[in-house]
Image 1 (cartoon, rainbow, N blue to C red):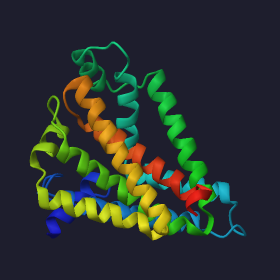
Image 2 (image 1 turned 135 degrees about the horizontal axis):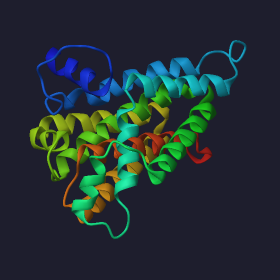
Image 3 (image 1 turned 45 degrees about the horizontal axis):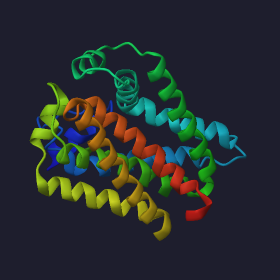
Length: 240
């Protein structure tokens, strides 16, 4: 089990740990690792205003998440927005997904994602630690669930991840992700659960319709969608 936990750390962060387990074998621990990262970011956001303005603390918290994960999921988000343009063939989409360059649509998606998350983190105030713990943890679990219910498209990490996922690990990740949302209360937890289910269902339907399945970039994009939506739910007055 320790090897699988280390594999989750190795895949989701830039922390140099050695593990022989695959990301799919480590899927059980994805929400846990995400929750730890979120709690650390929440601690940064909770720096007292007497030491740092809240906007600066929120910026540093978001910067921490980007750096510690190696911007892995941001890269997936940008690639998906660059590739999935109306009218493009599956072959053309795959070619763009493999291109390391960031286009206009990818850049806009990154800017909007960063702005939404930054503003939401700033608005969390004293609830930063439980909210970021829940949002970052649940978003990593969303990748596991999407990978299990989807077909792989093309070669690469997406294919090996989907093929290697087992039902027990997926159920465990899903339960952990669902439970994390309730750290911010029953209303917020229920809304986060419903929102993430809709994101996973919509993403699966869209990606399967366009390219017949998902890739690693699709997983990264859904992680970003989930994290942003969950944070927005946690700052919505209806659920506070």
